[in-house]
Amino acid sequence: MILAFSGIDCSGKSTQIRLIKRFLEGRGERVTVIWYRPGYSNGLDWMRKLVRRVRPGALPSGENTRERQRVFRNPWIRWCWILMAVLDTIFVYGLKARMLSLLGHIVICDRYVEDAVIDLRLRFSELVRCRPQANTLLKMFCPVAHHRFLLMLPKGVLVARALKKQEPFPDSPEIRDRRFYEYEKLGCMRGLLVIDATKPIEAVQEEIQSALHSHYGNIAG
Image 1 (cartoon, rainbow, N blue to C red):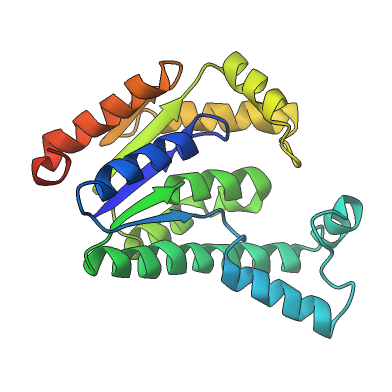
Image 2 (spheres, helix red, strand yellow):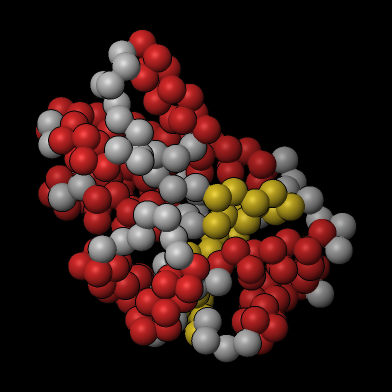
């Protein structure tokens, strides 16, 4: 079984995932949590290290923002990165998450396919033109989560939480607003439970557990 949690950073996903993991493990379930963002898997980290070792300076680190932006102006590099990120997303969700689910694990995804598409579209304008193809490819190979949750907060609350959290690489105000708009649109998707994350942590967790109980009473009962 696969449970997918979506939402902007600071919406409380990690806290709720930790609580539902504890809840399910307390009932004897095998639970695996997967956190993933396109381009940040262990496999791609290994490939980046290999490229930097073979060709020093060819792929700047994330800390070297100016040089990284210069390199990514090359359209071939951008398209290669998009392709690798899409294939990596398919590997993580289409293979790893699917296999764990088939082996009897409850797989909790901290971010899922929809989040990956939003990330890529905001970062690479090229993906807007080929969005239908990318979505089709991901939906073809990645399993549909058995239950999907979207944690939402008002924009002002998200901004306040982000400032308090002091993210090392925060979104610019423009990207932050676009990201919020994308998640608002995502909230209209059928089969996705939108949860008001301004409620107390315990109330949000109770809503998640109730949703699981209504569909999987033998697990969450």
